[in-house]
Image 1 (cartoon, rainbow, N blue to C red):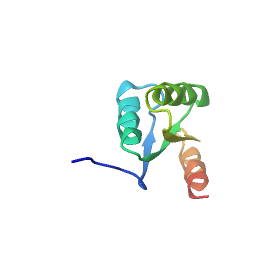
Image 2: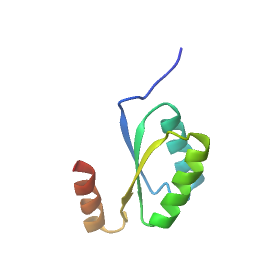
Image 3: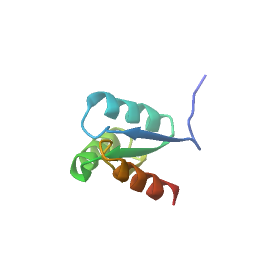
Image 4: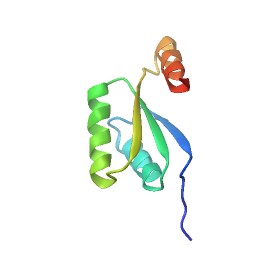
Length: 83
């Protein structure tokens, strides 16, 4: 039996450099999910996305700049996500 997450959207915060976060996103995109990655650093997020796309070239991953320690940052990321 094959499991697919096509047409599903997932959000993962602070997954830019932590192994568990990158592995979570890898598993989600491997099954066809569209993933939004929230992170403070665009540079680190871009690196993590590039690493995942080496393994899953058609991975549908999007970066949202956010800092979980700043509520205003989370609000701005949510607004961007909803557009």
